[in-house]
Length: 242
Image (cartoon, rainbow, N blue to C red; front, side, top):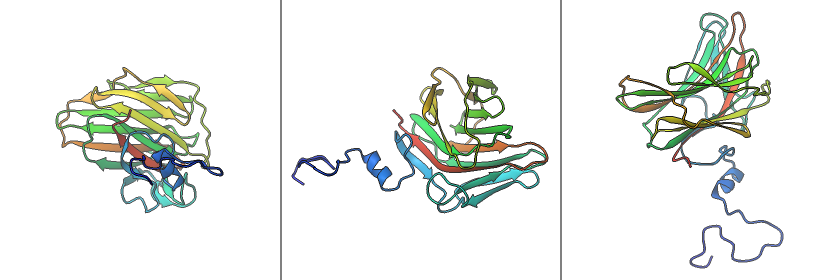
């Protein structure tokens, strides 16, 4: 390659192929599971191909389970299976602790199947800065087909209605929550192909000092006397989002 030419730049005409000048596209073609949005700088990602040991998984109730699974996946051969308990708190959840991030716009992406009989399906970002704890959370109400967000008072508020998602273990939906840590405000939510603006909306902030950290959590809650299974795959955390 001649001196001064950009990486992957074209210097000669191509007759039978097209050049790839986008590094994110090149990574996707080489097998990366980071294919949905490809923005920001990745600080953590997990496609569960090597197990679920990176996560703190737990379930509450009879028959509940959080386990490594090979039955369904978005990419690759494995995912994380979450089975809600049939008694007591009826839930299953996974948690990941990360170092305190750069003060920028951050993103939390995950892909999941959804069961229509769940009473709760939600995921959240918790940022602890030694003074305050900021909690940004998104919930999908399967019965009402609503997207909801946690407001400054810790209550669930309507973000979008009529959000019709496919309920099957064969269909993974991709959710991306973007928050701006410089302003302590929500930025937007992406669900599959749609973006829901959240500019000006404030997450919950409580005066609770704790060692600086970033905590990710995804939880499902079922109904009594039944166990419901969902699968999670391709979790991605980014900083310096545009």
